Length: 217
Ligand SMILES: Nc1nc2c(ncn2[C@@H]2O[C@H](COP(=O)(O)OP(=O)(O)OP(=O)(O)O)[C@@H](O)[C@H]2O)c(=O)[nH]1
Ligand SMILES: [Mg+2]
Image 1 (cartoon, rainbow, N blue to C red):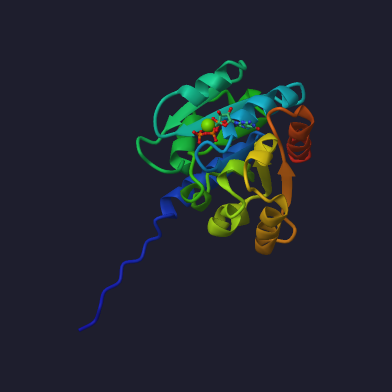
Image 2 (cartoon, rainbow, N blue to C red):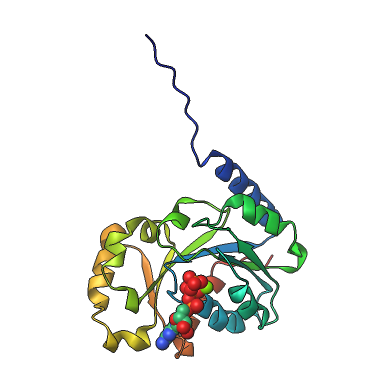
């Protein structure tokens, strides 16, 4: 008896929408950044401190991914930046189709840099292309230095790793060298920045890295 096989990647529809998003963003000269990391690692806080440093150079817009509430979008709206809250209603990651719907609602002609905060989760978001150009993996010192080894995919796909809440490091057993070794075991070239919301100059390093990648044409 022969066995019939139907094969269809669960990523197929997502990847198609991601390609369409990337083409649209390229056409409009917009650089999109997918910011990923565990719940509470400091993604929105990073945006709150980063946007004031970038807005004189670029027109910034934000997509906020969450399961529920508009709390993060409200924090970004307080900066007077265009923002759309994307609610996944239980889904543990953003999808390219949801981002596509948001792109249709944004004033694309007025945007240079689109910052996308993914759902707080160190696992699933890393598997779903949204059509972004850059990926940032966020790790807070309060999560522990073992996380890059335990959640390697997030750190592998990232173009830049950002270690947050370094002002709290003395209260934890986070060992920066151990974290760096784990990250560099995945990719020895990976850039890693260490930041704190209490130190504007640390946030400037990430702003500079973004500036070097954003097209203003
Ligand atoms: N001390 C300190 N606290 C921080 C820092 N960054 C973020 N926090 C705090 O960490 C908590 C979570 O920060 P958020 O920015 O909401 O984290 P998030 O990753 O956006 O969370 P989700 O969107 O729910 O996944 C808040 O109480 C922040 O004030 C930091 O650099 N230092
Ligand atoms: Mg957030």
